[in-house]
Structure formats: C-alpha cells, structure tokens
Length: 482
Ligand code: ADP
Ligand code: MG
Image: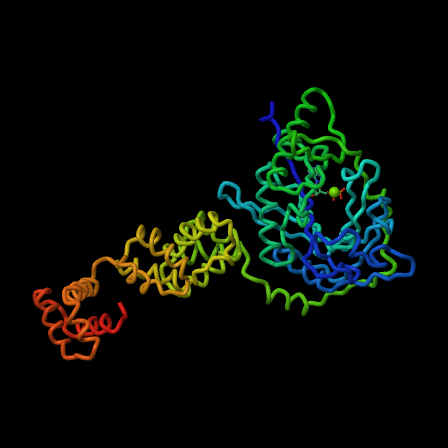
C-alpha cells in the first residue's frame, strides 16, 4: 500500500550565524558560557531599551542568499511575532515577516548522482529564543537566556523534497554551504544548525498537496531521514485505515524512532505579527551586494564543475574533495605543484583521507605541505618509486618529518628504484667499508688517498662509474661523520 503514495517534504532550516555579538544587542554569543551570563537589558527586553541591528548579520544573510541564487530584498523590515513562553522574556520574537531578506532561490542536491534543484521559498533573519531545561531539577524548569537574541537565518524550502534521503542530502548541502561561507559553524549537536520537517503524503500522480504535519527541532541528518520515513508511513497507514491527517506539530523520539504529537499547529494569525516599531528599516544597496558577491569563496557547485569538467576527475572523487572546504583548498594548492590531477585526487582520497580518519583529525592538522605531496607524485611519475612503497613507507616517514623533501627522504630511506646513483652510492659504501684505516688516514689529512678510492670504485663498477659523480659521492661520504 505504501507504493501508491509519494512523500512530500518542505524543510525550515535554522542556522545560527557566527557573529561575536547578538543580532540586536552587544552581548556575546559564546556557546557553553555560564547560564544567563550573556544577557543584557536589551536581550531581556527591559522597558525603554532599544534594539540596534548588527550589520554583520545582514552581510551573512546576503552571502547565503547569493549562494542559493536568491533575489536580495533591498528594503528590510522586522516584525514582532507575539507569543508567550518563559524563554522569550520580551513576549515577542523579532523576525522578518513581510520582507524576508532573500527570496526565490534554489539549492542543488545530488541523489544517486543525479542533480536535483530544491527551490527555496525565502530566507529570513530572526533572533533565537532562550533555552528551557525541564529535566535537571525535580521541581523547577530552568531557563538560560544566553541564546536569546542570537542571530538566525531561517531557510524555507518549497515542498520539493520527495523522501527522507533527499531531505538528508538537502540538509547536508546546507551544512556544507554555510561552512564554506563561514557564516555558521554547522554544529548540529550544539544546535547551531537544526531543522523542522513539514511532511505530507499524497497518491502518486496527485498534484494537490496533502495535509501536513511539522516535526520540530531535528538536529541530526540521520534523525531527519528517519523521522520523515516514519512520519510518511504513519500518515499512509492512517489514510488507508480511513482516518485523516490533522495539522499538527510533532516531535521525533530518537530512542523509539517514532514521532509523537506535541500540539495542534499555530497559524500565522495567532502570532499577531506587526512591524517592529523600534527598528528602523534596513536598506541594502546594489554596491553592498556587489562587494559581498566579489568576496564569495569558490562554492561546492562551482568546484564540482571545475574538478569534473576541467580536471577530468570522476564525480565520485570530486565529491569527496569538495565535501570539506579545507580538503578542496589543499587539493587546489597541490594542483599548483603538479600536472597530474588524477594522482593528486588519489592521494587526497586515499592516503591523506585515511590518515584523517585514523587520527580523527581535520585537514588543518595534516602536517605535510602540498608541495611535498607533489614531490611524491613526481617521483612516481618518473618511475623512481612505486605507489605502494610511496604510500606505505615514504608517506609515513614524511608524516614524521614533514619539512623533508620527498626525494631526499626517499633517498635517505633507500626507497628509490635502483638508479645509477643508488648503484654508485652502494659501491662507494662498499669500498670505504673495506678500508677503514685508509678512510681514517684520509680524514686525518691524507687527501691524496681519494685517488686510491676512485680506482677501487672504478674497478668494482667494471669501469662503468662516472668519475665525476663517483668523486662527488666519495667526497660527500668522506666528509660525513659516520
Ligand atoms: P508555516 O510558516 O506555518 O510553517 P509555510 O506555509 O510557510 O508554513 O510552510 C513552511 C514549510 O512547509 C515550507 O518549507 C513548505 O514548503 C512546507 N509545506 C507547506 N505545505 C506542505 C505540505 N502540504 N507538505 C509538505 N510540506 C509543506
Ligand atoms: Mg513552520
């Protein structure tokens, strides 16, 4: 019976903006600070205080708007969304209502390697509420207002998402994007990025939307997917058994993997939105937008196109590289030192990625500079070392001594495929080891003995040794201390 239906999802994603101070007040926004230590009179909404916009917040919202192909709203108002709750001491939340800062964009996701555009209805700015805790004290609920007034963007999608998996991809893409843009840390466990999933079902082929429920506050990709899958099944079973889906706000129980009703859903008119009387409208100019646009970093979509189309990498490799901006940046730097894109990608997705996983480290912890990795790639391309030895011996050695050059290290560890040089060094070594007292005499000043050593090496090489190189190797070896 499930096959007859299709799941329809629209997501409302909240991303906490990474500003030092709050959206309308100078209080700090540090996560995990002592409860209620970052709460000024403005945040608490004391009578007579005036909110004042933090301009960074506007810039950050424009960044995400441009990155999601939105139109930027030039004239911005804030509204009061009125409701009573203990973690909202003012009695209203300041939010954008009639003039969301970004409108009508889209985000491209990939599902089984096929690109799909999810339209974005709008992105608006708002302040976060405080945090209530109900399970720490047997008699009291606890309120921490540090989070009250922390800036958020809410990214509202159109109902274009068709499964839990697509929702997962969309939410992951938003996380990656805000991290690339450096506007939100994307930390779901700390609640910096969380979402509400609106879920409905309808018979396949039907164009009208079904009645939806809204699952609040999902802060993990896996939970989002599971919650949607559970909720869609629940609705289908309900409809099939003659029941009706009612508009509801629900919550996901991660332990049971089920959703449960919290309350019937409020409608917009319940909030009595009206323009915030104490915030001057904010006007954004074309110049400001152009300046922000000029400074946007290369974004995942663009990198994916460049890596696959210009460098000829597979979509699979390219996706691993762009998954993490630091990885893409490292790869770009590596490409400045090598022509071999395929090998460079293989080193990133192979030995380097394994090291990161094993050490549970991030790219910024990786000690070997890109130039040295390019050095390894060159050694392999010149057939001086093979990949197995390079990855299993040279790479770990460079991890220990990251400032060493790849070639020098390979030489030192005797990893190079036998070349004339290596052959000669061995002969030099052999000859000198045979005559310890002559070596001692040489070191004590009888420099004329170099002729004898030269003769011996020549003999051992059956005359094939290059005299110039032999002399050089001998002198190097004899001037070292061992
Ligand atoms: P509200 O502000 O009451 O939450 P909106 O109409 O702004 O409601 O929609 C919020 C989100 O719900 C949007 O992401 C939208 O795409 C999604 N949505 C609306 N109707 C449906 C539906 N029938 N099924 C699934 N998602 C829906
Ligand atoms: Mg909603």
